[in-house]
Image (cartoon, rainbow over the protein chains, first blue to last red):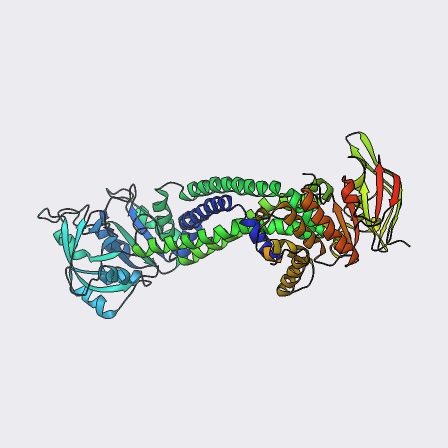
Length: 388
Length: 231
């Protein structure tokens, strides 16, 4: 038996209590990693840091669900400092079942992949997309998951747009796949021309524009210029950098970061009490034993250190499990595309950073709850301890 | 100089505003290899005297010198190290750790040494054989009788081979037969292994096993008798 072995044996001497404390902490750290990672994704800093600095986004001024005229693409393309304009529309797509949602955008293939170079597509697939009227491309992960093959006719339902015959089920031909820059990105891209031709309404309209500009420094000036162009029209617009637009979009859900931080704070305050209570009980139960150990010759500092390390193990062990399971959950959500619909999938760097901070938090928690028992252990006289 | 010497020792405790005088100007000398029984009524200061000799308490005044070491001048850490090397403690209620096996309990003092795990285990088994409990090595205290637990406690006290055994009513919680076995074991440790033993007891029959008996009353040494060890 070693000193560490002695600490471990102490930790497990009340198995039920230790297990229940572990379980509380495990759940808390699982929540921390899962919610914490998502909260980070919703924060302004992350959004700003992740998205392209040389793209503007123009959408309807009053609501993002309103369309804007497609002719704005050509008009804005004429402005100095604008390199390229592409457009997207929210199709409200699903595959097979309405609850199996797909992020689906009708786009202009000739410009989309130039404005979004981080979406990599082979020349062969891009040419096919350009030339196939009912063409669609999908991220490689989605193609593999549904075992689609090039040439397949994929039925995609729309929650919004019926075809002219009233049918909400559309058929597209898969002509290729692309590789997105972010794990979990599941947007299916459709040929806008075909969509516009066949839709029962919304012809000549698009959802929003993505504008590639020559210099990020021009963003404020161009945004103002574009908004001014349509301020007195029936379709006024709001233009902002892509990061700002995304932040505003996510803000529709409320202050997610604040809400999640509040939940996590409450969770951690509770587990601090749980953990402190466990350590306080463990300490009270063994005051006489500590007296015996001091009598045998264990010095104050060694026993205090053992008490502290027991508290640290108590918080770190379940934290490790919670963090690993939490990361697994995020990974599964990301790869299934379940988060892509309403919540951005946290990038691996964010998850790893949250995991690291979780373990740091667990360490701090252990030190906080172990400090008082450890200090009391070092200060306790043998005579008093033996009479406890 | 005697092996254990207490010179003009005073020990007071403070309870609120009241000062309790436990030991008053006490002088005592013991030689190496002595087996002393300390007797006296409750509250007479027996355990306090034992604590002073064992280095787990310090006198209010006076000197305590054990094996040439002046205990009053040592820091808490120095005293802890000295105890681990020089003293073995045996308590009335055994004070074994309930979640450790007999062997692990005995190994505890050896964690303070530089011995390797295998050597610690071997030493613990040797101590268990000395108290005739090597077949109970894997038993936890709850699976042993009172007498067996006290023998394990004695094995723990001797495993680091200290010169002195300090026993606080070692038979106080045992039936007569178990008590007799423990006392015989202490005699063997004194005779064969030359351990100096100081034993606090209320039991005159237990005191008969000691070579020397001291009586304390209200903190004062009132009687000293030297007796032959009972066979």
